[in-house]
Length: 104
Image 1 (cartoon, rainbow, N blue to C red):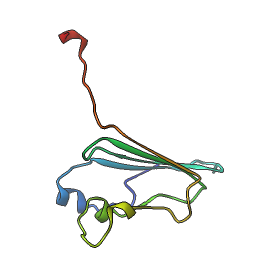
Image 2 (image 1 turned 90 degrees about the horizontal axis):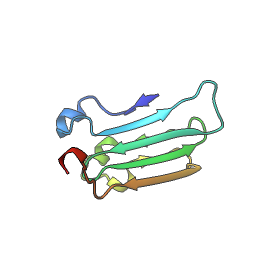
Image 3 (image 1 turned 60 degrees about the vertical axis):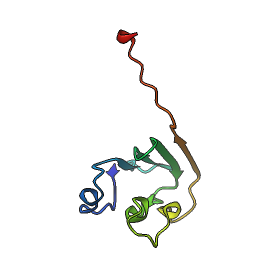
């Protein structure tokens, strides 16, 4: 499993977010016919993007575009694959309600 593959180590202190995005790539041994990749973010609304791909078709994140540190790069093109994924899906939580039964 890789976490934040390709993220420059000097980038996180520069943006001041700490670790708020996790890009996870699952590599099976022995290899399976499909691979799983997840991108979880808590910048703004909590969001997860998941993809099923052929082995070796890993998610590539342009970290500078994702954090909007390069005005010439598009946020909408910050996640790429060498080949189209077999399946992708994303969920954004627009409202999180905390409930503590002890206080009610």
